[in-house]
Length: 562
Image 1: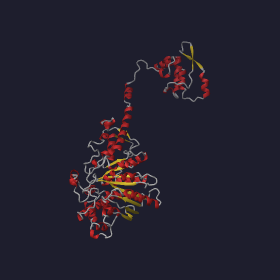
Image 2: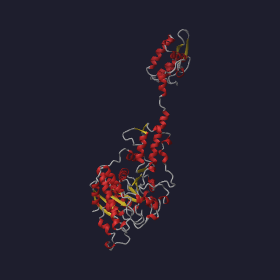
Image 3: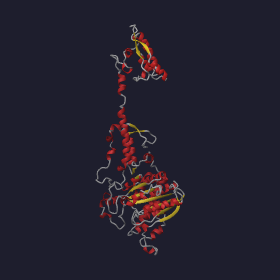
Image 4: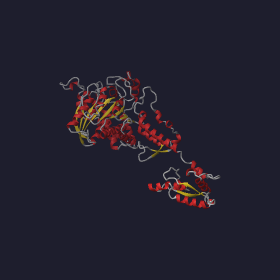
């Protein structure tokens, strides 16, 4: 009984003096009520280790003591199992080993079925860990399976083998088809659930595919800052984030029309002139305007830009707002000023303009610096000018003055000045508090295929050295382009760090309008000739949705040409 009392008293408060007094105490233990003999055993110290018995805890100990006293008087007055327990306890067995199931006492069928129905906890934990690994795999490698190429002919793996497709196979994580309809709790490192904390595996995979494997590929898991990673996850994983208002869609369509018709006009009017047109990446214009709009909304008053010759005339006309007469007169040598140098070709010149931003109704100053034929030479010039503007207007955090740099894919990967400029981005004496880089990735460098031009999968891999997030986007999906540019502008305003937007597009003409690309890239340009223009595809999409009527589209199209 002393063992029973010891176990029952374990939860009762006991002072040190009481414990000391207890060590030497003895009390008689009656072996059987009929034997008339007594034996004495030392009482164990309360602090001595004893097997835990849940039924001896709390108020249950009083009940056990009453049964024990009843058993002392008549062993048959208690259940046979308690009779065995008390006999073993009196014989010196520890409480944990005192209980023995009496012969013939077996569990009921109902109890057995309940025990068998308990879930396999180990399997449950393994499955939840597998789902977490699956989610992380999409976050790390989902961009490899995104539909980024408008032509559908590119493969970022240069030996033409499937790229990282294994991460989408649930069997790789120890799951199978029977698990697809099971519900799993979502970890805190994903936002695909929205307001839901658990989802079926089939729905988890569907939402991950929508977030990471459509027209946007997000590279960010190399960033070693948890807050920044969570911020990006929330922007791209939250259900319904890419919802646009009717007004936003109409504005986007109008900007696409102006971008496209400008290039078409130049091609018809001066078909034999070099202009390095933007055909195949017309969504660059609404992309830049979106970055400027969002930055103006965040308080930016001065945007300094640098870019190569590809699409420069279109940017001057539709973003900077250079007068069209000034652009057109440069195509006619008889209209050019006599005192201008012969080397100042129209697609190398810059522009400075201050105007009202129509979206935010705020004043904004736009500068596009001049650029030589050395494509990336303007990069440090833009950063230096931005730093000077920030210094002279007292903009210590870069909230009012920012820079945007445009690049070609081949030059971005191939010219060392890009790498050098990136390494200035976080230096205390040189930082401009974040630059938005936009890469016009037409998947060709003059006549060279990317597989023969660089060793990295993407032209943007150079940006990883400064932990800049990279947003790859299919340029034939204007709405995806606009959303990515909004996120890029918000990133710069939030973290004041560099960010890269990779516009995966194509080049409808040759390197310049005098070049015939069918000689050097016949397979690519065979596919390009079949490609429907992005404006036509987007207009048809909006008409099908009912966002605009065909008549409204034609009126807007007509107005842009007059």
